[in-house]
Image (cartoon, rainbow, N blue to C red; front, side, top):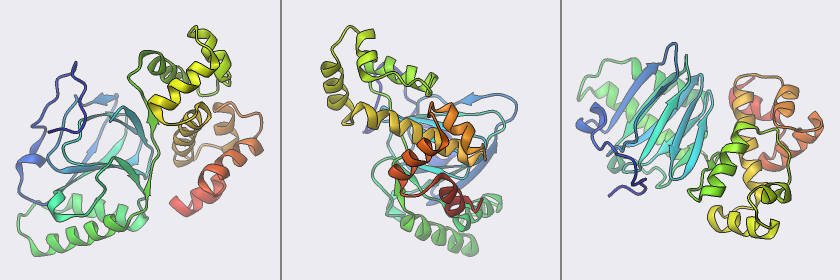
Length: 267
């Protein structure tokens, strides 16, 4: 049975050829041209790795929004209901992996993808789909071994079903620079600050500051992957200065934005 489902939405259980193939690993590459495209809610028997080469992809899964900026990947285990939105001009590789042939996470997460893994995925996607090819099989096994060793991260922004929190989440998404306090937001929902704080903790298991901070990290990583100036990212997220943004970023990830770019993308 699927691990998550929104009952009001139809979920497709046979979505694409990947689930009909006996190949333990299938790699597909797709370039989305002039407009944003979106998949319906669906589920795969195999696990799915979504690697963004350029552009941006948003995956909605398990009441969370997972932004997949360029050169990053999100792992969605098999039997997990999700849908994806692809920005115009995005270049994406999908890797479908049979859970019986790999020891990958049981929960949705972001995997840290090295340049080697990225190039290996692109190379396999370009190969002819020859079932049983020994050379292809060896490359697939190397890729599985490397993915099993990839560091796991949690760069998602929870989208709770509770109506007031869902509305708040979408307002934060629409205006990440909005620095209103929890007390300010509570007044807008005719609640006390304490009641709203308790509701957020109950439904999301985070404080308001942690929740908003998680959104800022996701959006900051998207900006860094697109090589936007750090000052511009700081302004877009509502920080009073670049140094304040760098301090926040370093507290969350243990390094400065520039160091993160160099470690991840060699920028």
